Length: 368
Image 1 (tube, rainbow, N blue to C red):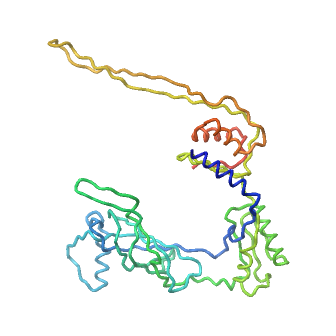
Image 2 (image 1 turned 90 degrees about the vertical axis):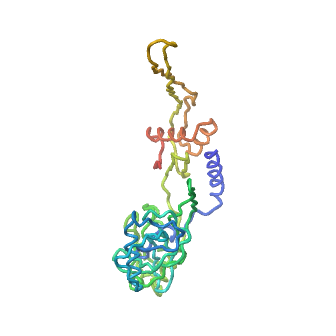
Image 3 (image 1 turned 135 degrees about the vertical axis):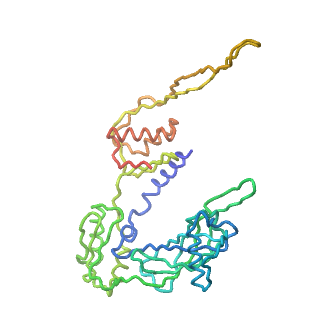
């Protein structure tokens, strides 16, 4: 049923394709050099848990950070023994978007690192977030929204989802800006997310046609250099605002992606198969242990023994016979034919692997 639904969606996409435009905005194909996000990380403490926090004996770092926090607040806990169950040590991660200004907020993710059972209902106390250079760029604090649920009783418990991780929307405030002067750049590089010489050439041509002069040069399959000064725009931001909305038709590679766990097959319409013959069958091997218990007659001397008995058999299930696929056939037609014959998804994946190994499948083959 999964493959049938996939084929229906694939057929629907093929029917819509001629009516829809194949052109994509440049902003959806490239990354602008320097215009990127930055990862932040911090180590903090969650409080207010309902007895689901870290066991201090198993997570001594929780006691250490809790002591540090209390001492910063003027509470002397040196030499004191306290083992609360409503606190948990966590890692806080976030992504700082480009051109984020001081005072703006970003979302954060909170994940337990000790043996806490749940972060539901917890509150993250003030946690500094550092970048790769060791500098503090944001401070996080707020109530956690966990993505799961947990219940515990005397005889057992149940857990749904992941209650030891959660998010805080707008939970961190930017305190330091990243130094990057976009307006000072005279030239800028455009990096393709999917490097391809044809696509890069089309982007170069489209940009030069839009500005009426040679302002873009293709350096390689993944890079185009843009001469910002030659665009005649008021600033670099104005030039990029005009460039990113230019429409280009990208060239896509022929690619087949299969997921062996779910039996999902995804392919592009450019995939082609040369002339090839396919034959498939299934062998089933069954081995069953049937031990026989032998014991002496009543009032007779002897002992009971277990005699091993093994039953083994091989069955060959009917598969598809020798089928010939004509050259130039699309992979969607081959899969539709195999699906009509009742071939199981996993057998279908094995057939595609064999066709690729035979050199008849002209596409990049990815197995996940």
